[in-house]
Length: 51
Image (cartoon, rainbow, N blue to C red):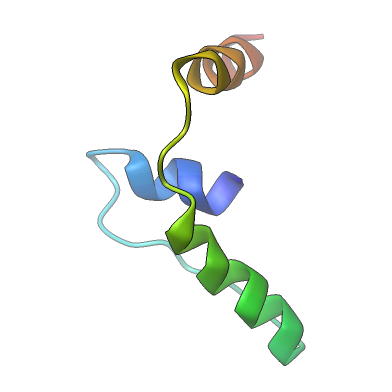
């Protein structure tokens, strides 16, 4: 979720990821398929970041 959220930010040009296993890399790449947060999800993330 963190990678997908960061990739949605207009000021972010790239995201650096670290993986020690190929399964971790696959999970990170799957974040590219989850860039469509609902309005409720975005509100919850924004609220968490402000606290």
